[in-house]
Length: 342
Image (tube, rainbow, N blue to C red; front, side, top):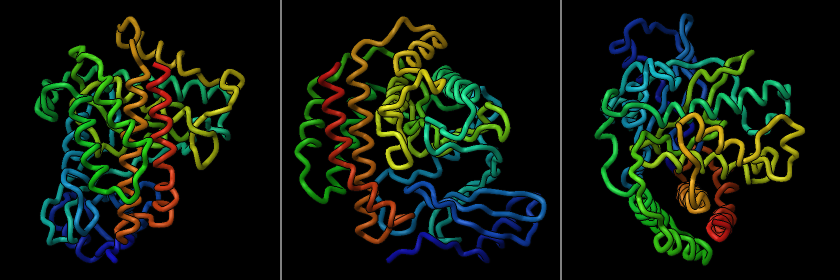
């Protein structure tokens, strides 16, 4: 079994002492338990707190766990309207700790596991979701050529590319036949809308638990987990937000299904989409069900990969990986339902 729970602290300390300006030990290392893809560690020193994010060791799916891309995109966004942590260095030498890694600042603040934010005051809930909307619109308004990301993703139809990519990833990690997943993949090919020409930076996993907010306020301090980012179609990110909200409320589903959102100071799906369109100067979105179906499909493919890594003994958090993996058929069925609704 490959160990993703520990870090060669001596090797990291020696490397940072030589390569990171201002770094000075001693260093205390703690692994973050959240996240399944790239093992992430807090590095605390007397004067500064850093985060180390690495590729997991072992045999990996092609193009997965691209920490070098995470480092590049966050470096490019420094100083933009999209808040990101400060990037320090990227180590591409696998011999240091066994896989590529990068170092960034630790951003202090609040992180919310559930979009309903049950322990937050109503006014703050409203403001935080509005800020989430603002940041998403800002992300899709970044001039990709001006920040050096014009070549960060290929040309062509984003959804054609993504459905093909994630179908291959799913097949590579498939453990059982899931009829709903097979139907969904076929439908996403057959019902794909015409390309409307939008080509922006996309996060790929935009949701509230991948954001850090001010410790006492409602401003976003940093957007995290850029592994799936690329140049693509912005509606995929928007649909990813709505996808999460349709899941059951609570710590497991981490959605807002069944909640009286208005009573909680939270927007409806339609209100969030309208506010986003206003911020980007759009007149609305046709066939949103396709984009929503796509995001359910992609998430199903991702968690199938998580399950496969758990079964192979290569998961960052094995217990949670097994639990999450059981939801692949559920996400596939949600995707089919979204397509039917249009």
